[in-house]
Length: 305
Image (cartoon, rainbow, N blue to C red):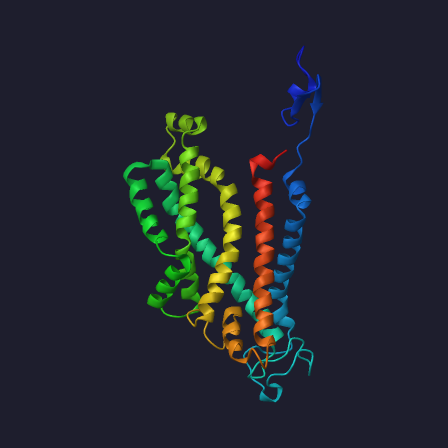
């Protein structure tokens, strides 16, 4: 029931009202899922990305070819010939099978590197934004030093020190993008720590760790999810670049960047060795970028109309 003189619009906080032309207009905000589905690019990106994940999960199990075993009788077989849908490489290995196996490695590169960067970003950015002062100064000066180097150059330097391998490449890519997440989390923490509910938590004696975990971190989640989603695409590209240069996955590992490196010497005689892994990288990165754009529009308060 509503109090005397109270309208239905004022009694329901979930239904915003606007005054237009002398009349009260009731408008219902669309749900988060509905706003996401309205974004055609994001919907397409989601379906493509889900398909890629399914192929990376199921494809290697149903592929009739082992990505590591050579068969010189099928050397440089053209696409569609002798059972090779996307052709064979210079050692007779099926390109389609190697791309399916490489999908899991490239996705691992993106997600593990970003997860590593997010964890470090939270450990450094939350205290810097919440406490400020000397803690903030030390953390941000360290991030400024890291930002002085391009991310790809920093990743190259780190993996050169650690040694060329897929795991070291993941660590290097994660460290190279840490400043992005530290600055984002710090900015969100700076704006949130001054809000009334945080002040109220301090007054009643809630500890600093609990305030950061229960009150500040939830307000950081929305922008962090968007940036992390787009960061996965960047991590895949940087990881493929490291493998292309010989600092990431090592032969005969069927990683997309390594496959591009192997195929560059046969670009005129066996174009499919480079074109199809390149298309796999492009489609995966495009789908993640479209998905990230949709998440940004869905979580941005300015888009909630």
